[in-house]
Structure formats: C-alpha cells, structure tokens
Image 1 (tube, chains in turn green, yellow):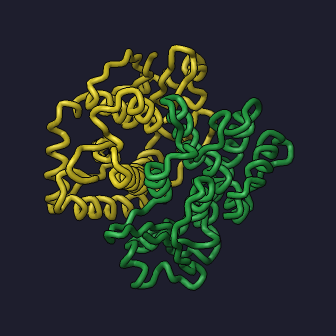
Image 2: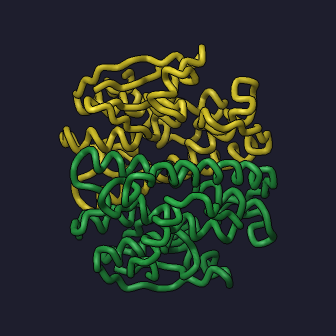
Length: 210
Length: 210
C-alpha cells in the first residue's frame, strides 16, 4: 500500500498523527501542493478530486477521505483504540469529531479558501469544479471560530482530553484544526486557559510532529 | 433513554432509518421545528445548540450528532452491520458517507439556509449564533449538487448499493440527502438512470418510511 501525503495540509497530517499514535508505518509519497502536483493528470488518475490524502491499497483500490483512511487502519490495528471501545466512548468521540469538523475546521476553510489568490476559482477542494470565492464566508468563519474555541474550552474544563480520559481521534482532529487555522489567522485567545493547556499537551506528544 | 426527534428534518430521519434497519425501537419525543420548539429554553437545556436529533441516555448524558447516535447504536446492536465489518468495508462506507455529506448534503444546506425567510440570520444550525444568509452560497450549492449526483450515478453503475453489495450507512445518508434536497429544489436528473434505480430501491425498503 501507499499513502499519498502532503507536508503542509491538515487532512494528511490527521492521518500521519493517527498512524504515529498506532506506531504503524506506511510507505508514503509526498505530493507537492505548492507546484500543483495534486492537479496533474498523474495524480488525478489516483484521486480524480485532486485531494490528499489518498491510500492506494495493494489491489489498486484507492481509499479517500482522511477519516475513512483512519478507520481503515483502526480496523487493522485496533490498539491503542482511537475511535473508542464502548458504545458511549464511540458516540462521544464521533460527536466531538463532527463538531470540531463542522464548526472549527469548516470555519478555517471558509476563511482560507474564500480569501487570497491561491484559491481563486477553487473555493472548494475538488479539482473538477471551478467555484468562485465568496468573501462574506470569511466573516461567517470568524463567527463560527469564536463559538468553536469557546465551546472546546468549556468542554476541557474538567477533562484531560476532549472525549474523556483517553486521547482520541477527536483530539487529533482538534489539534490539526487549530494548527491549520493559524494560516487563516484564527487563533486560540489567551484567556481560554483550558484549551491552551490541552493544546500544549497534545502538541507535546511525539505524534504531533508526524 | 429518549430520542429527541423531528418529523421533517433530515438528520433525525437518518437515525430513524438506521434504527428501523436494526429493528430497534427507542422512545421518541417529537420536537416541533415549525413552532420553534427547538429554540425554547426547555429544549436548549437538552441540546444548547438547538439541533435535533439528540439522544438522552438513562444517566442524563446527551449525545448529539446523528452519525454519533447511529454509531452508538451500532455498538449496542451490531446486527445487521451498517458501518461495515471488514477494514475495507468500513473504509468504503466512511469514505462515501463523508463524500455524500460534504458534497450533496452541504449543497442542499447551502441552498436552503441561505435563501428564504425561514432561516434569516440563522444560516448555520446553531441556536446560539446569529449568522447572516449569503445568497451566493445557493449558487455554489447548485454547482456542488450537479457534481454530486453525477458522481453518485457513476458509482452506482456496477453496484447494488453505494459501498458495495450491502445496504449501509452511506445509502441511508444519500437517501436522506436526496429527499431533503427536494426542499431546496435540487433533484436527480432523469438521465441519471443508475441513481434513479438506486433511489427507487432504497425508497422501497420498509425503513424508508421511518
């Protein structure tokens, strides 16, 4: 198998951190987003959407979407569990993952892809679609971001990690989101002490450098 | 436990179809979205975001997000599996579920929430946030929808169901999305014969009326 990866982008980093937490090594090929390698015919034959990451299996099937790739590896390498073992753990991790994606990650994407020349006419991440930027989405993203970091700070007031006692996929998703959001100039305000404590601890794990 | 439900909305329907496929019955309480019951203090104490569905467990914990509620029930009632058993099934179902949500469901939400008076200043589904509508998002949604139904039609050219031989959470997500999108006047064009065949078969399952 081979993982098509990219050093800067948030979704490939989510998979890399996940694999590092599992202690699993997968052959990687870096796709250079800066030179547009993800939009070349060669890469579009692997993933017609031009998105990274993509996991090419030994039989040629290509699995896209970072959450799907992580769930694939969770099934093959169950330990340590990052999606939960009991029903309530599974539910909490999925609920917070969805919330982090829908509020925080979406906010950062709204800002980043709808402002700046780099994503002109590519405001959604599908190589096949020409979609114009909507600058008003940046303002919406800023409102969403503020609510997101406030909610996450409250959640972390009495918990080590987002879903409870154990580091999980929800934490990986939040770490990737918060670090990625810096590119959109969205930050964690200083007064959100719980979230800053959590960010320090998540960033100190060896997997964070993956 | 109790499931806070709403008859018209797509996310509660996703959970109802899921439970019907499992043959699981859960006590429900209908929240009347037309009269704004989801924005009352009583409901905001259950889910501060004012969203349905929400699952209140016997110990008082409330689980939000339809995908998280479904995964909770999958863990308690594994048969029939709707999220997949093998790693590749799990990966395919998650990958297509994410794609249906991110392309098709998002497109319908973009159209519906950013046009029309019903969602004025409530353009994102969080009761705590006043967010202005952006009419340009409706145009973006229409572009996304067209690409979505084309891709799903191609996927179904040589498969009974979206993730393969078995009906799965991806099919539930697509059925809910396509039926919901009618409210946004987004349809499946007549020439997409594979997708129309699939929609007829998914709609004919007893669970579709749940």
